[in-house]
Image (cartoon, rainbow, N blue to C red; front, side, top):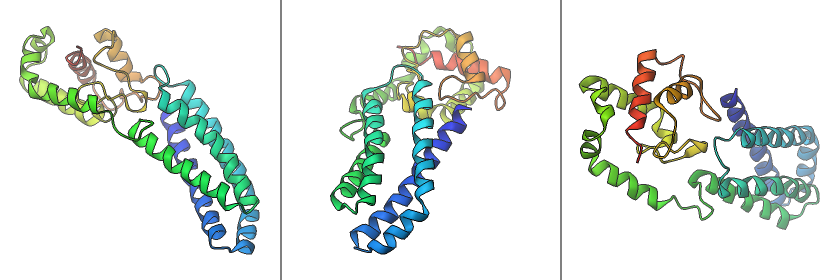
Amino acid sequence: MITAISHTHILVVVLFLILFLVKAFLLFTNKHDSLDRFRSSTRMLDIVFGLLILITGIFLALNYNGKLPNWLLIKVVLVLAAIPVTLVGIKKHNKILAAVALLIFVYVYGVAETKSLKMRPDKGEAVTGEANRIAPAATKASHPIITELQGTQLENTKAIYTNLCAACHGQDGQKGAGGAANLAVSTLTPEGRQEVIANGRGLMPGFGSQLTEQEIEALALYSTLLKK
């Protein structure tokens, strides 16, 4: 459900931006008659896309896994401001408002990609990840869970984690993309982690249909290796 809403949100945002870019091009090239005709023919689409952006965005925010970070709150506020600025700027043939809206959308895209208001990835995360890669053997060797995941099973589980989990959680469990929980500080028990892996939580989809019970159990155990 949440995955479908997330995909719908991204789709309507892209469609809304495509319409805006076409109108902005016509405005900046002084093709006002063509702009008016195009705007008239897409007026209903603007309304529908705008409402869908708001509805799906609010739904995803309410179902965010954990506390909303500052960059996401600012992103939501800017999008809410940019939509009416866009519509008014195009309607009034106001190039300044249209340019402001365009800059806002570009900035919002940068913030969404980097998850930083400065549009720079967190360097601390890179350092932590590198440190974890330098001495993984020492950390794992002293962890009691390692006795339950041996040889091929450990490597297979690590591969599953890399393919299904690392994009959001990161190799060190601390990436936090899309609201992913910080596995390095999570207090969930292995059983609780199995439940989340199988059924999902927040924006995270469930993998119960893709993994066997044994794989889910092993993946839950592997994720505890990332705890500090």
